[in-house]
Image (cartoon, rainbow, N blue to C red):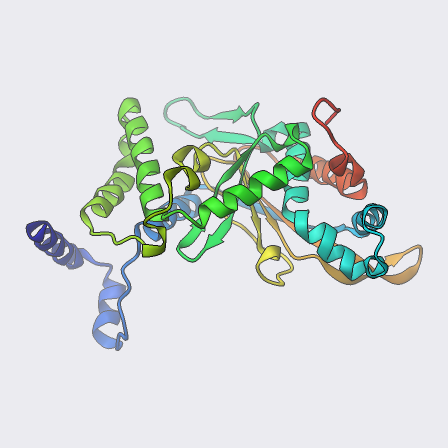
Length: 338
């Protein structure tokens, strides 16, 4: 093990000889308090997002949705099931009925909408020198959702939420979130990396070399798991199939901070990503009067190579239909029309 460590340090020393000249200049002329080595998780994210920023022409649009109908619907259904005087407060309803299933409601709304806008649910193979390019429209709607853990961000997947009732989707999200917080992301990403490397070898894809090098380097670097995760049973952790195979991604910053909206970065080869802000009260003009309304902001970012903005207009109008009529989501049962 000692010789491996020495070899790694030697390799790192040689690599700094070819370091970006601007970084080298700053290292010589700026006092450094601490050097933090990027974890395998951060290296993987940095590589994927750098690819995304370099190769994908991002186009983003932000829309504000009026959730007042959702609040009123939840207030009515909560009053029918929990006849508490306190329940009549809109704020209480927001916390009891919406907050509890807020992410699940929007994840299912987006899945239902993608069912009607298939171009935004799939993956792009842009190869100008080989095939020219293929946009694969996925039959499955597999939505990755971001879970923030103390070890880093993980993106488990809900598969085909448009074919499940809201309670099932909410339960699956809770279970995957708990599993994410019991999982060592370095170990998980190394397993996922191995699955990708095997696929790359079968495809003879030489473009995977930088990712392969990051993966090999992580295997050579000693990793000490969090002691709190050491004795977690394997069945309680996220598995590779829980994080690979997404056809689109949702980031809900509204569940973490009072953020109005976020402009998100596409995870290639996906062609769309959705960022949801926090629910808040804002003044709106309704029937010529300024009134308080519950609103949320949704940012949609697309890969402009795959399709034009017209798909976004269709997405907005269909999404609005579901948000304005929450019973279409809350009361939906398998077998009902989507």
